Length: 279
Image (cartoon, rainbow, N blue to C red; front, side, top):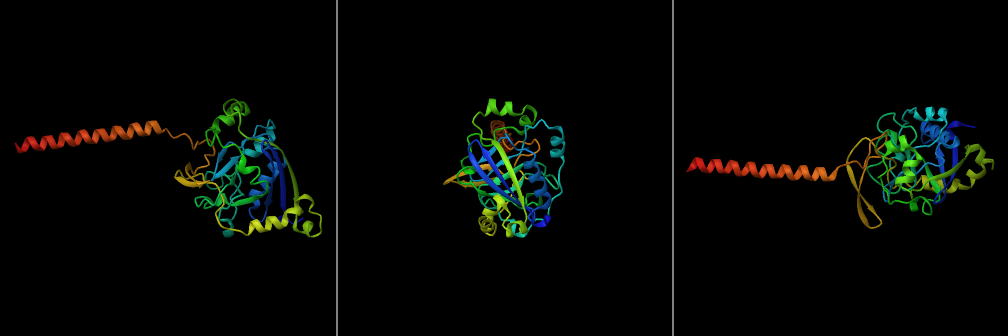
C-alpha cells in the first residue's frame, strides 16, 4: 500500500446518531497518521463533543481512557505538515487539529460548521479529512446548549464525572471503526466500506469556498452568522488548558465604568483649578 495515497474511512456512532469521516494522508501525512491511529486505538470512544458553536465549529479530543501507553502516546505533539494552498479555504465538514502554535498538534480535532475566514490560516490548521456522511443529520444536530462552557482543565482532571454532573445532555462518541485503503485498493474494487464514498469525497474535496481549521493562538473574537442570527464566539479553540469562555465580563464592565468616573472627576478638578486662577 502506498503511504502517500492511503486513506481511512472512520465510522462513528454517537449519542446523536452515526456519521462517517474520511481522512487523506496526502493532505496531511503527520496529522493523518496521528488521527487515524487514535481512532484505531479507541482514544475517542465515549469522549464528549465539549465545544459546540453553531455556525463555527464542533471540537472534541479529550479522552477518558485508562490505557497508560495510549495516554503517553497522545501527549506527544506532532510536527506541522505543509499547508496545501487548496485547503486554506474552510468549508463545512472539514476536519483539522486544534493547536496552540507551531508543532503543537496532539489529539484535539474540530469539524468546521461554516466558511469561517479566521480559520485555516496557520500551518497546524491544515485539514486532515472531512465528514462524508451524517453532517446534516448528526454533526449539525449535536447539542449546542453548553457552547464552550465546559472547562478543558476540569475535563482533564475530573474526567467524565465532571461532564455528566455539570453538562448532562452533552453529546458524545459511542464507538468508532476504521478501515484503511489505498488508491490501488479502490481501483481494484477492494476498498471495502471506504470505496463506496470515493465519488462523494472527491466532489467535496474540490469545492473550496471557505477555509479549513481551528484557531488557537489568537484571542480575537469573530462574528459568525448562524441560522440568520449574528453570534459572537471566541475564535480560540481554547486548547491546552486555556479557556475561551473564561472572560470576566462583569469585572471588565466595572473597571471600564470606574475608569470613566475617574476621568470625569479629574476633568472637573482641572477646570475648577483653571477657573480659580482666572478669578
